Image (cartoon, rainbow, N blue to C red):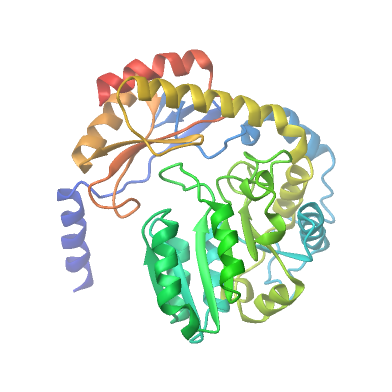
Length: 388
């Protein structure tokens, strides 16, 4: 019986320290504190990197300009039927214009985006090569495509080149998948080297997910591709509204040909009800103001560097070069214990365990925002030292 099997598997997860539960999040304060299960804690788990999600001034400005006649609370249909509202088209125009690319296409989430694009574009004539640590949504997309795929050691360009030398000439297209800032390690892809490989392998198509870099990096907040001057060199440049931009949805900037193909072949796009117009309006409201948040980015960068350097002085090694700072503890029990002790000390940073991260690398994922007070950081560091 299914109930018996599910109970047995859940029990096994519990014994392994991998069973997850949904915690009650009652309230968030100014991008800094959070009420979890009735306890007010300093929030070190949010992806609201710029603190825009709790910015009352921005929210008030937006609500004053809301047109309830034009921006419905629900789209009630897929984009190919009656859900392609004008505000969604305006958002895509803003994206394409800001990135100076031919086209853009919005998806309901970053997960829909990765699954929908990769499963649509990859075929039996395509070899997909993915970094070992790319997001699960990318892996799900390539599995759904049924294409041939390889994985290369994380951020190891030499390992990627060996696969290309061995297999590239056997396929019409080689799709290389990477994140720009990795969600669990906080390190950066070598985008310049990846772009350089396109000159050697003309069939190489580069796919970069900037989910954790958009809003945070680049002079205008467009991500690492902007920071390194590579926006025009990346074939499929993806981002999300659901993290630093405090909204919902994912997007890709690409050629008009790719956009048209995805509209006709991307199943998550074709068969999903479109984002509510009010959500698309908020996404556009924030995206159009990205360049205004330069000071937020600078503050976040300074705070991130301070905590990374201090942790290194305390003897911890870490791969991070960003605002995502992992404290890798190894066992699930060690990570769970450390997270519990942090809660007792007034901080919220849930343990991250397999399968989200590789076996033996359970961790605390310290996720900083521009609103994290320096005083809170100074109190955090010795607390971490005790907890770990």
